[in-house]
Image 1 (tube, rainbow, N blue to C red):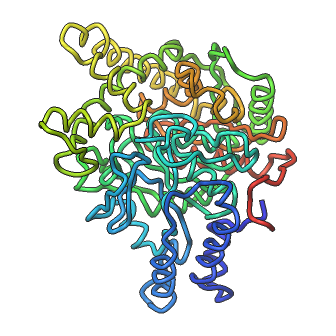
Image 2 (cartoon, rainbow, N blue to C red):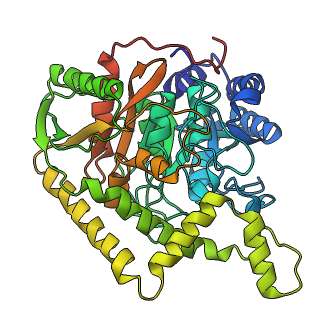
Length: 484
């Protein structure tokens, strides 16, 4: 864990020991050394990154910027003005956006420097970063293992030490699960806390942008910069934004940590369960009060999600028809152009989810599938409301297993979908969630998931930070990582 954190970089620049250019050059050098095998990046923009670093070093206006000179990477479904943005899909292979996502503008204002765009599952549909149309990303802790998904490129880039933080998006666990698989900290904020303007939509009522970092404190610093109300996003919350770093070191004395009494444990690896149980015991030893809670509808979350998310994806992806932007196939008729553009542009997993979603929304099936899924979503949210009457945060595994092998689940979508069993409920309920590294099993990282009340990221980060101070497991060096 000797790769510098966001906090350490900011302190070094403020003290005059280093410059923004020093850190950007270090990041670009690391990418050149490691990414040929890791394949975390789809695009690296060296020229623009170095120019931005020089501008930050020269201008006095950036002297007190909250992320002055810190390099970062952005998942390739977050649009960037003048920089190719593909969502890892052939249908957007040559798309160069004319505008920035709000989070990119906010990070520019905070004087962070984007060095590139990271690989992902196509249109964020996947749990392994294997459905990308361009390349498969490896796990830094095992070249034959997946980094998780869909934000696997961002997670791998942070875990390997290529950048101190990266942005991802989380629709059903796509920040937390790859964070668990790669041994970094991943935060999904409350739905509406961070603007979705400029995020290429998968499922609009579930998607949320968040950071990958090395520590909870770094996540707090990044969250300070990216959240807040955005008039360009109709789902953006007007909830006041605190300084998430304030009080993060207050400890957990008196904090009530809920554990689920009848947690679904099918497929839960014993080593993962043991690591998570030990982490909860360490929090209890630090003064947290552990209480049992019930989430009776949790077992239905995966089925609920895989009706709602594909239905929304079916609507969102209808815009990719070859007419306005994206791939346009040569054809003799309009209908043939639609068919060929989409057949050539979309991968198998995207096509599968569009078909499922269109079916669930179709006449005669809407009430039986989509409407019932929305009713179950309400019950799941109500379960959490009741649970939070008894506790302040909920703790459980992030994923039931450690990182599986590349190709192991690609031909079995149902088995792949079940990997999200512990992360999906928080998206359905719109809650904040984080994954904190809590151990290793056979050299592969394990994540402790913490779920908080709506807009209470501060407590969640505080608990995560307290655990980081007392965790005592051996932390192996990544196989694919920056030479220390």
